[in-house]
Image (tube, rainbow, N blue to C red; front, side, top):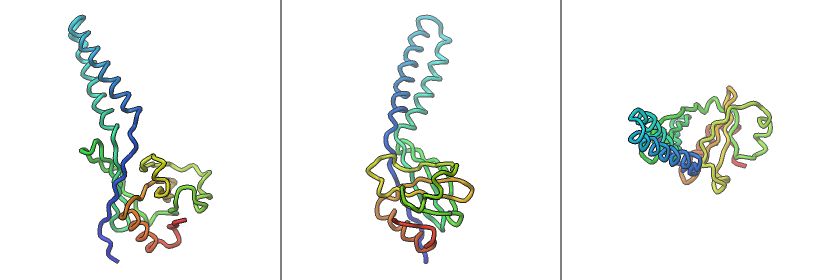
Length: 169
C-alpha cells in the first residue's frame, strides 16, 4: 500500500510567558541604552544581549508543529513565527508499543511508568478529541494532535499497519 507523504500542521497555543519575557527584555534593553548615553557606553553590551534575548523569546511566542508521515515514520518539525522551520525528531513507528487517544484505557499500564514526555500538541482543550498519545520503546511518550483530513488518514494507515498497537477508542 503506497501512502506517499502525509502532513499535518498543528498551531500551538500562544505562549504568554514568552510574550511577557519578550516585552520585558525590550524594556530592559531600552533602559540599558538610555543608561549607556547618560552613564557609560559600556552599558551598550548588556543592551545588545537583552535585544538578542528579546529576539529569541519572540521566536517562541508563536510555534506550530508539523508532523510528516513517511514510510512508517513520523517526522516532527517546529515552525517558529511562521518563517523558521527546525526539525526536532524522527520516530520509527515500528518501535511503537501503543498508540491511543489521550485518556484511553489502553494507556493505563503506562500511567505510573517514568516516561519521557514530548508534547507536540496544540495545548488547547478544543483539540482533545484529536489528541493521541504514542508510547515508544525505550521509555518515551509522544503527545500529538491529528487534526483535519490528513490526521484521520494517518490514523487509518497506522491502524492498517499496526492493528494491535493503534486504537481509536
